[in-house]
Amino acid sequence: MTYQTIPSKELLKIKTLGELKAAGYKPRSIKQELRDNLIGRLKKKEEVFPGIWGYEETVIPDLERAILSMHHINLLGLRGQAKTRLARMMVNLLDEYIPVVTGSELNDDPLQPLSRFSVDLIAEKGDQTPVSWLHRSERYAEKLATPDVSVADLIGDADPIKAATLKLPYSDERVIHFGLIPRSHRCIFVINELPDLQARIQVALFNILQEGDIQIRGFKVRLPLDIQFVFTANPEDYTNRGSIVTPLKDRIDSKIITHYPKNIEIGKKITRQEAVVKEGQSQKVQVNELMADLIEQVAIEARTSEYVDAKSGVSARLTISAYENLLSAAERRTLINSEKQTSVRVGDLWGVVPAITGKVELVYEGEQEGPAIVAQNLIGKAIRSQFLNYFPDPEKLKKQNKDKNPYKVITGWFGDGNTVDLLNDMSNNDFRTSLQKVKGLKELVQEYHARQDDDTKLFLMEFALHGLAEYSMLSKNQLTAGLQFKDLLGSIFPGPGSFGDDDDDDEDLNSKRRYRK
Image 1: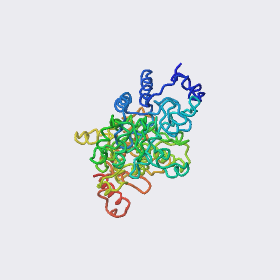
Image 2 (image 1 turned 120 degrees about the vertical axis):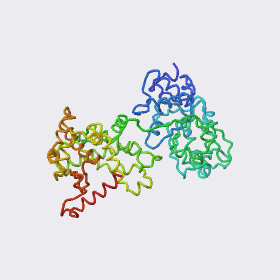
Image 3 (image 1 turned 90 degrees about the vertical axis):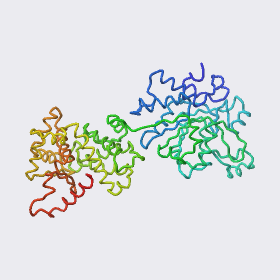
Image 4 (image 1 turned 90 degrees about the horizontal axis):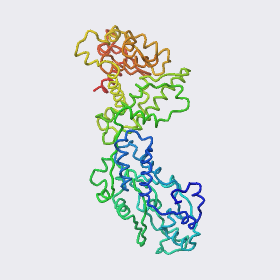
């Protein structure tokens, strides 16, 4: 029986170097360890990176090839693309436990000690050297690159306090205080946002990546560190001259490019997996597939918007936060109206504006428009895009000049001077009554979605009004506590005596003009 086949419970009973040798233990580098365990997973057809959606045919195969090649890895991509999560999940490919010399600060292998402490201890006690076991969860270290990171932080420096306490001269290597990297010996070490490290710090990584050695001050210390490095970086920073020094870039073996979800279905999987649904919300609030699609569509529109900085990216955290805000907006309504249950409404999307404004970086034009207006613009575009998946294209109907226009009855009802106010905190009954009074709206939904349940049909009725407004067939005005739908021409050319009577309408029309460029 070899060390690798010993059950974990039996393994932990080994307490000395002599017992470890008798068990057949042989040292193995961390890269070899990752490679061997990955090979085992692949042979068993086990999922290596569970919960990572959309990378099955792109990023994950590249990452597995890099591990099999025993490479240092750089994950290159915009924010919110699961780069750090992938790095953290590599820990699952490590052995459950590895032996270390008890008391060693560098996780010394009992058969290949590095530190002066472990070398002296083994020389003194031999096979009676105490051995401890390090769990794989403790073999991961992470550092966010910031301008204030120093060589001493990452690699180490002479410690005058240690020298004074131990009464050692500065020439003794035992006065060295090791930094994060030496302390990550036999571990996975992740540096996030690598280009943000100062050039002199990047230079200090050269020898570590190439030779596995470190140099601290004037000490002649050779530490052949065994570390799996994983870096993350933003493409804009990584490719700009001066952001990352070329020799360091050359020493990172595999550069793997990440990406955002390539379709809405993948985005929904990620959002539902990551969103924190509070206790009781899932029973109180029902979310249909169309609303889930709309949340994802907002992020898609943001990534192509002229107002949003494409170089910064739009994190998947936008849809996660938006989904959580959506549920809370509907839950708040049930609490106000003392209702036990409700379904989400299109109007609830205006409750996710804070999640959008907090997750996008605007260009100059976007700053001029204002974050809230840009967020409303993105929601409007999402509604417009998804509308065509459920109802006929209003623009094509105009061009074809068909007599049988499914929207004619609805627009005609509004043309007679009727309006509908959909307030944010309306009760379920008031909301249903307001929509059902619109002539032709219920028939429109029945014609195209007869098989849907009543709650979904009601949602589609509201969605139809929003969609028609986005296609300029109705006017949608922002009220203090909700939205008002009315005839488009009537809102532009008010009747006699009405001009200036409704300040809110004038203000809302100006807002509408701003975010409908």
